[in-house]
Length: 80
Image (cartoon, rainbow, N blue to C red):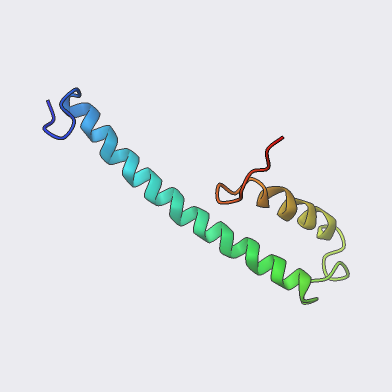
């Protein structure tokens, strides 16, 4: 039995440790994704990445950036 979590056994305590490591790793990945998203958005808005450069992928990229920005857990949700 854990002193910190008296209603759990030692196996459950290990789950808490693993969960903290997982959350830390996910935060690093999210930070990297946000940097990628911001960089691509800046390139498009600044004219450094144009449809002429990537004609087959430009529209998809714009839609994907807009769609995934709304999925970021840091994005405020609108109430319906």
